[in-house]
Amino acid sequence: MIRDSDGRLDYERVILLLVLGVAGLLRFSGLRQGIPFSVGIDEPEVMERAVRMMKTADFNPRFFDYPSLYMYMETTVAVFRFLAGAMTGRWAALAQTTTADYYLWGRMLTAALGTSTIALLYAAGRRWGREVALLSAAMLAVMPLHVRESHFTLTDVPTTFFVTLAFLLTLRARERGTTRAFVFAGIASGLAAATKYNGVVVMLIPFMAAAALDGATPRRRVRLLAAIAVAAFLAFLAAAPYTFLDLPNFLNQFARLASEYRLRPANAEPQWSIYLKHLRIALGWSGSLLVMTGLAVGVYRSVRGPDRIRWAMPVAFAVAYFYFVSNQSLVFARYLLPIVPFLSLAGAWGVMALAELAAAGISMPVVRRAAIVALILVALVPAGTSAFAFNWNASKVWTTEQAYDWLVQRVPAQSKVVIETRIILLPPQYRTEYVKQLRLKPLDEYAAKETDYLVASSEIFGRFLNDPRSYPAEYAAYTTLFRETQEVARFVPTSQHPGPELRILKVPR
Image (cartoon, rainbow, N blue to C red; front, side, top):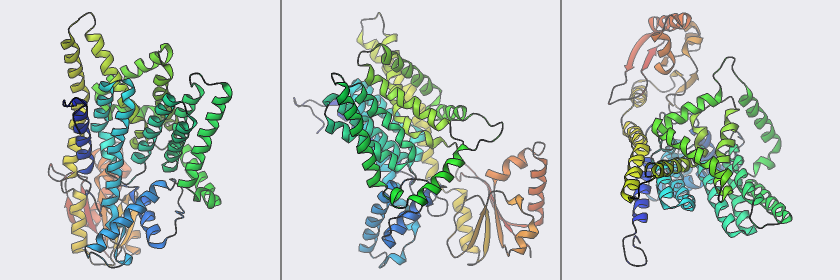
């Protein structure tokens, strides 16, 4: 399988397998971290509905912050997880399982989609040559942002998979020029939108390809545009049917969601600036410079050609999508994931352009190869180091796990525990309440509501205690709270136990 038709070793395929192996290792290792006590903040939004669908056969999510395709995918995985558990004697009925039993397999689905995205990017990058294809795949394989988000049951990595699939199918549609090929690109675009609404921006890519198809008449181009739009709509309808079957509920929730994204705090840093910082962290300084160089090359080739539309599609999508998310008030680094494959492609363009520049005027191929190797190391080593560090930390026992174990072992069932943020998720036998900041209520109010324990997190109180001059009121409130309660346990982060500092406080009655 790794030899060409002449029986020689196919080095391109060997390198691709190594890249995919590294990508899979980074994405599948450490998946158990935080289960079930400290899963990602939005993971329950997907998993609880997926498990409910499996247990009730009611496929209306009644939740439209996300479309339902990924929930249905997780429901399918949950079915297989239950069957596997039943065959090994772990449980004999659905009622014996909880959502926590399905998180690991759910995360494995995300990791598989994340790893598969690297293969899709490689296939797309082949249009620019094998060096660009392999390098862009390698850059995405070790990109810390994509590696980290591939560990959670969230919609951003699956959306990125379908966006990259739509890009690949559009490139093939341009080469084949058939309506059927463009319809497949439209279907992939609809599936991207059915995974997360912002995936609809990828429609720009097949639309551009159809509108600029070589040799097509204006009428054929209009027909292709219509075919893409209809295919995308039908795919969205099939993958998220209750968007229409439960239309009033969808419209109400969508309007509420849209209003949240429009809220802009006064004097806040512009969203585009925050996202650029996130990208700089994800790419590193060296990677950022290579991506900027590659985007400049892409813009130039989009204007001067040859084959301008092939260069214009990834550049136009990256710019359009960045503009789209930068005009929303809610800012999370993972929202940038759909453009990460395109930035990896641009980074590969940048490496090749700089290598050609370094070897300009020199007829020795070894100089060009040496320049490429040096630039590859610059592009991959910092990002890869960061990605491996994330997985290394994920394999450790975090302070959240220490605090969770202490609570379930020492706090009686039915005790009321108030936790700052959703940093720890307790089993249902506890009366758990989550608050943004413990200081927002006086201690008397906690006692009046029969609260037994408070859990304070340094992610909240840390900045107040560390800078009392800037936060005098907050500092006073937390020091008073800590003084008037009994601290029964404290978990301080170390090199072996990362995480926030957590203090467990007993409320006096």
